[in-house]
Every structure is written in structure tokens, then in C-alpha cells.
Length: 358
Image (spheres, helix red, strand yellow):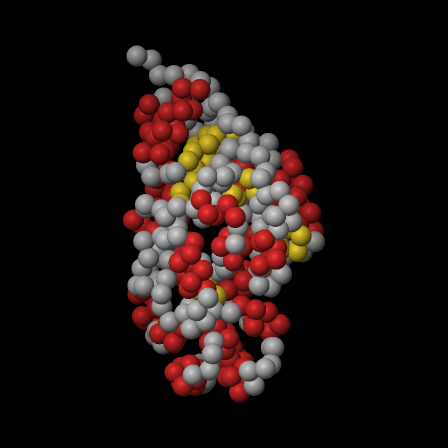
């Protein structure tokens, strides 16, 4: 029996079925026209809303023109994998406890980059084996790829007002990966937007980083300054940070569509070291060696040990005053790094004058 034609609906469906068998929850296929997304990105960059995220502009048009990034690209296969380890209510309970450290749910287990890359490679290998060799490249947030507009075009969901992708039957707690290929595959129908008049994500954002529907000011985003930046957290935003020590999920926790979010089944995303329940004092006590061991193969490595201590110091400053919290901060008062000392001093000052806002 001959292989299906590269542009046949049968092949497209087979690719989706193979993806599901590899652990993805959905696979879609789209073209490479990102003109609308490119215009929006350029306007966002021109407004300086990317802050210190220099990588968002340094690749020029390659981010929005797939064939410039990987010559010969005609289609993009995009796949989603759910990462939520428990229901949304469990995440909300952790966030509501000021003595626990809140970590973005995607970062509680293994670093997703390796997991998605390996599965996408297996999918590409299956395509090669079943059809013919094709010119392709696998991406998992590792190169200038407009993954959300591509996923939207491939029917995986729509970009919500918080700028995350939302799936009508699965919410937004999932990760994306892509295969750029030269195969002329049959494409899917783009997803339609179902945010309506809801603006819960704008209202809940602790630092008002979502400045308008579909517009995020990275410079005010908790995920940005707890993960992406190595320097001090802006003083005026520290109190609003609460107990969020790595990333922020507020806009997702409040999204009505996440009532459909389901716990993922991928073992790699299982919670490590009890990080979904850990107290701030315990996490702040980790030595650098302990931190290195417990974050091995984890997305938490991105913040660095100094960033880890910086973030937790702020969260401790926002926690209720107790002998344990004061002792933990005092133990780091003379830390060798100025970055840590500064945030510890701020936290101690908060407890000395809890009515202060900054």
C-alpha cells in the first residue's frame, strides 16, 4: 500500500494520531503567514514593552517568517501538552497561603524543553519513516518562533486578553512545541476568539501588567522580573508580588475557561521535592549546593540561585511577621551578594514597619 500524498487529509490526520500516541493532547497544522502577528510584535517592541527581553528583537524578521528561520518551511506542525499536576483550586490554595512559596505550575516538575523536544523529534521521525525524508526542524521555545500565533492558526486555541493561548476544552495550562517542515501538508482551520466581554485577567493581575486587552507590559510582569531579569525587583512592585517566587499564574487561575483544565498525565511534569506545598522559610534555607541538586533538570534553574534568594526574600517580606520568618531573614542579612542583601533589608524593613507599601 502506497503512502498517502503529502497534502492529503489522511496524512494530516495520521500525524495528529501519532502525536496523541506520543503524549500530546492536540496537534494542528498551519501555513507560515504571520503578517498580522508580525505587525503586532513590531508595535509592541517599538513601545518598549519587552523591557530587557532583547532576544525578542535581535533576530529581526526570522521570528515572524518561518522560511527565513528554517529555509524551505512550508508548514508548521504545532502540538500542545498539558502540564497541570492538580486542579486549578489546588494552585489557588497555595497562592492564598502567604507563608508558602508560589511557583508557576509549569515549573514544578522537569524542564519541559527536553520533554517536548524529544517527543516532537519522535513525531518527525515517524513522519520520515511513513512518508519520506523531509526537511524539518523541531522547536521547543528554543529559537525565535511565534508559537502562540502559529498555534492559533493551527486551531489549537485563541490568544486571550492575557496574551496566553486558550483552548475551549482544555483552558490554558499547556505547553507548545513546533515542527517546521517543507511538506505541503493539509492545514487546519484557525481557532476563533471566545473571550467576549470578560476581562477577569486584566482585573486580577497583581501588578497591572496587562495594560489593555491583548497587551502585556513585560516590565511590570511578575514572571518577567522573577525569572528573566538578574537585577533588583522594582521596589514599587515588590509588595504586589506577594508569595510568588517564580512566575505568576493569576491570569490563568481566574480565567473561566480553565474550569475545563485537566490534570496532565505526563510523568515528567510530576511535582518534585514537594514544591507545590513548600514553605518560604524552608526554601530560603537551601544552600547553593542544595538548590543546585533540587533544581537539576528544572526550569527553576533559569532564575539562578541569587535570583531564587532575591525572590524569596521579597515574599518573606510580604508574609505575616513571625519569629521564624525574621530569623530566616536575619540569617541572610550579611549575604555576600548585594542583590540578596538589598532585598533582605527591604523585607526586614517591611516587618519593622508593616504599614509601608514599599
